[in-house]
Length: 631
Image (cartoon, rainbow, N blue to C red; front, side):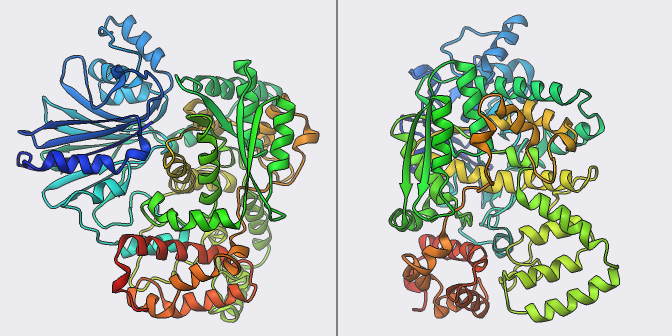
């Protein structure tokens, strides 16, 4: 796990000062790679590649980057891990294409695979999480690539006559050509979702490479992003050819495939542990880790003082049953006060998921003991675990019993009553009644502001392409979350929160073999009596009794509503001051102030809508001089 950065001067050689520029850019990523830094420059070609290293596999200098291929043709900066790289080495040996290995790093394996199999074929063979940039010295082409599900980040864009790329926006901002032009359309999308969805970034002219894709730059001309792996294709194939076995066979197959993924992701030359919330996903990963390795496991969790949010007793019960070496840390308002002002720096662009707070703190806690942590993310999207899936399906079934014209009349009436009540139950009900299909009901469930009502004057969010033509409503909801919410919220949250303290996180549930099996499983094996993860729970029951796991799903929420009316109130008041909002001009000041008043008045659901606005305001204050804002 590392940080990568670089630039290409289009049509001109490097400037004399570009080595220092690259060093500044690379230095911005020191938290992603505290163990070493490296640079490679080709002055005549105008190319500069930088790397910060967090040594996980091959701790010696044989794993240093930037790294050249055996022939010297390709030079790479690589962030992530390829878990099956020894399998790829064996394939190269079988083809008489193995070089004289310098060490046992997966980066060296990838370079040899690129030279022998070609870049896209090498990617199709690789199982892992990664983002990399590969320079072909023969063709003078730069190729960027990202892993299948989007675990690792990669930003890129042309600024004047310079092509920039990097793991985080802060490294791009360190280049003198960078233009910090906020994209108002991206702000509108952020207000609705709580995150900036790919391919957009918060800055105009800078994009995120989509998961499972490559993009090539030849003489400054960019290709379109090209998919080497498509979740849409995997989902369609799974739905068309479902798993043919019975329940017991499906349970055994999921146990085998997920267990293989967990074991494969233990490859490391440093201490490894796992996050344990006490929920189904993380408990399954820890149980399989314990069973497959036969060794004690280090586990970590965060607790809350506020009732209704604390999962630590459940995690402790699972840990005791599995015999893990368990550690927990209690999170209180003081911790939040300390971390909230730093979120804008950690995430580089506005990020509205409040669970970033405990995620960062549990990462900080775990890093005192280990360098790698396994995580249970991905189970909800693959196995139908979110409560909103069941509520959406139930709601749509009920709405269909009401004639369309009657729903329209009711929607108009309720909408008139709800006008001005952003985030209210009445406003959401009006959207449910106006929905033409279950997909629109689901968007109404998840949108923080309505598409028509996002409070960003002049912002027009681009329509997303998160639809799945085949499948029932449950499948379409899971797919939509897997290609938007999962990479741009969940995985981005974990990556930034952990890498800020130099902790590598791994997600076994997103192994491509697990993903492909999950999409082959009929819905009846995922959902029973309106409750998701049925088969995953059956696998877990092999290791942890139902009596320990029988409890309502909680999620990784934090009591921000209470904190905003208490210890965080002054911080929020400063960011939401009406003169400030009007001077900055990104949000409709009157609507935001009305929402803030409703929250202070005790409207519980207003906090979720308000938090992303606060996160944007905090990010703006961090990236722009506050002195220019009216007090």
